[in-house]
Image (cartoon, rainbow over all chains, first blue to last red; front, side, top):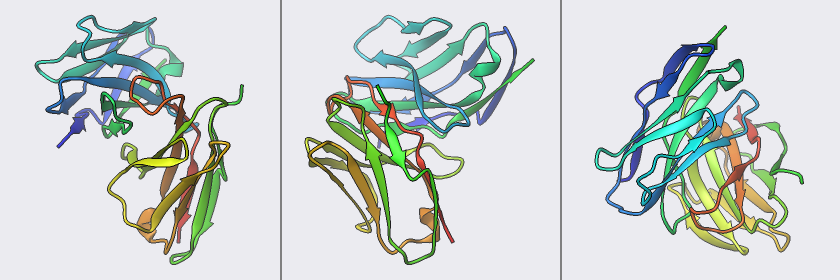
Length: 114
Length: 114
């Protein structure tokens, strides 16, 4: 079965510091996509970053970067220079290539302390 | 351009009733997916529609049904509501049906069954 596990229900970080959110997944597929989505209190899921499994280079988007370890099936998100607006639920998601169904983890609530 | 719009934003129903949730995708997007997010959990895939045809279904009972209209908007119908159907229902649209295209989420409909 394809599953996504986020083992940290909640994390806290001081403003301007760096935090890493963990995600592991289980799949027998070789080609797939991984995502980090942010869900603020407004409820709208916002794409933070995306990684194609066939790319060895880790994706980066401004202050957000990932550490993708395909053999270990690990996909962590690093947020640098944390800002108050980063406070939200963060969901890791997986989908096999050629399909349409996102499989989400249970989420990590990130608190940013001023 | 308007994002993905969902209506209503909130509603309360009684057990045994029927409910219809609506979603308008981003202009030019032909794929609409529905997810159920129970409080404290990640979203669970319910359906995907692409070009007005069902392309995928998650592990949900037959009480759940959906359709997509010629203008690519979509409805999610739930019959014989149960207390356990209380959740945030999210709609996501994308240009294509595959995982290589970004999915954009609406703000969801919060359904409470009493």
